[in-house]
Image (cartoon, rainbow, N blue to C red; front, side, top):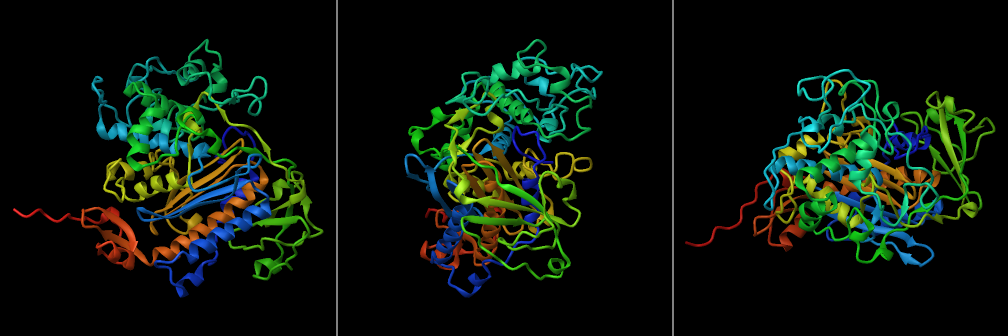
Length: 544
C-alpha cells in the first residue's frame, strides 16, 4: 500500500524506494577503523555524502537526523530552505512532515490514555483505545453502508478508536481537496486554512455536509475487516484529542510534547511560528523525470555490474526492484529498456525501474506556504533537531535523556505493537513496520509525501537507531534520492551504535554516550550498546 498523501496513483517510485533498502551497503564500514569517539569526522563525511546526493538530484534542501538510543548524534541540513531568498537550511529549519505527522497524533492519543482524564479544571473523562468513537464525539459517526446499531457498544457496526489508528475503520479518503496549493477551488489554502477542523469533520461525516458522500466516504465493510489507509482516520483521532480535552491539538502538542522536549521549531499551523520566513519552502519538481523499465540481466544477478557512466548534466538513478540485486547509482540505459508507464506491468518480474533526471531541466517552483483544514493527518512542521528529540524519547521508552517522561514505557510499546496482530500485522497506532526484511531487523516508523514534501522517519528497534529525512520538494527526484540518504544514515548509525551505551549521570538521568564522553561528564558507563530504556540510574542520596 502506497502511503502517499492525497495522490490516488500507483507510487512505483515509492515502492522502488522500499525495495531499494532491502540490502543496506556497508558504506560506513571504515568507521570501525577510525576514531568515532569525540570526533566529528564521520558526521562531516556523512553530511558531505548527503550533499552530493542533493546536488545530483538538484533538490532545494535535505534535512536529516540520526539518533542512537535516547540521544541525537547528528542533526543537520544541506542546501537552501528558500531558493529565492537564499536562506540556507539548518538543523533548526522546520520542514513539512506530511504523513509522518500521524505519529505525533498517535502520541497525543496515548498521552490522553496515560492520564485517563483531562486536567486544568476540566471535567474528568476516561478514554481507552478500544472505546467506541461515538463515546467521545459531539455528534454520531455512522457508516451508512453497514447494517447495525451504532448506539449498541457491542454491535459489529461500531467504529472504535482502535479501528481508526489501524486504518480498519471502513472510512475512506475521497478526493475533495481540489487542485494544488493556491489554485481556485483548492482546500490547500495560502497560509493557514480558514476552515476549522470541526467544520471539516462535520462536513465530511454528517449527512447533508458540504463534503458528505456515503459511498465515497465509506467502505461497505464492517470495522476491523479490511485495511484501507485513510488520512481521515488520523484527522478523527486528532479531532478526538480536541473534543476530549477541550484543547486544540496544536496547543495540546505544544504543552505535552514540544515544550517538555525543547522542540522549539515545531507546530501544526504557520501561526505557531514567530518567523515564518525560516520555514522550508515547499517546491514542485519542474520537468518530470524520464522513467524507464529495464530488464535485470544474468550479469547483474550474478553480481557483475554495468559500466558506470556520468553523462553531462544527467544522473541516472537505478533503483533495484528485485531483492538481492544491487545496481549502480549511475549506469548506461540498455537498448532493451522500455519507457514508463507502458511497461509498468513488468515491474517485479525481473525488471527494474530507472529514473533519468536531467539537472538542466529541473527548476523547482515554489508552492508557497499552505495549510488545509484536516491538519492532523499531515500538516505538522518540524525541524531535524526537533524530530531527533522525538525519535530519541520514543527509543528511550517515553523518557528523555534529561529525565522528562512524556509517555509510559508500556504506552510506547503499545504504540509500536500490532493493533490487530492476527488480521492486520505490522500496523501499530498509526506507526507501522515494513517487516524485518526492510532494514534486516524489527522497525517502526512512517513515511510522508505531499505537495512540496517527502519525508521518512524510522526507528530500528534492535540497533536502537533512529533516522529521519526531510526534503522540501516533491516528485521523482526526491523519491529517487530518499533511499540513498536512508541507506547512508542507517549504515552510519549501526556502526556508531557499537561504540555507545547508557551513561548514568550524577543527577540520575541517563543518556547514550561513548565511554569517553560519559567519563568526561562524570557519569557511570553501563557498557557498549546498553540501553537507557532498560537502565535504572540512581541519583546520590543526600546526606542525613
